[in-house]
Length: 165
Image 1 (cartoon, helix red, strand yellow):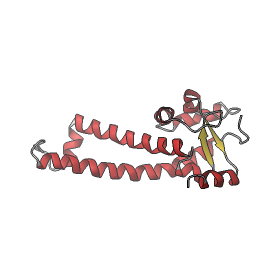
Image 2 (tube, rainbow, N blue to C red):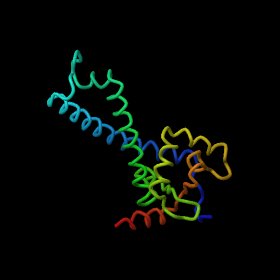
Image 3 (cartoon, rainbow, N blue to C red):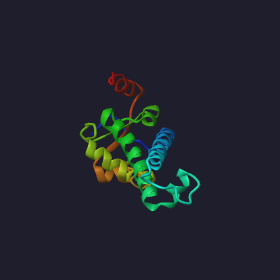
Image 4 (cartoon, helix red, strand yellow):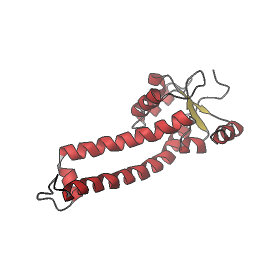
């Protein structure tokens, strides 16, 4: 058991809002890159615009292209969270709100565990279980993946940040 308390719902949601802004920026960059790749295929004659007025309209009306873009955006989001959880246990938003995700024995998450946790946490609704599990303060993704989110002291949060150098 950790010396720090588990994080409540409000800090988790505030952290998620911070991280959401960063993920949106990555999603925008990913979408631009995807549009450029599809435009490249059109320029090479591998794909036809047909009756569509632009690349975006083509993607919106083609289930395969639309599905690929959707999968790509979900993967970018999952990789964002997993990278930070495996590196320090903290995303940018978690660092601002002094939160850290780890295993119950204090270890950082492995890539498979982090990817699974990010998949189960995708919509953020699993965090509402913190209200039901008020003693343990575990979200759905914590229960499924065997993780916990702690509220660090200011000193410990600074130590975790400084250890990244």
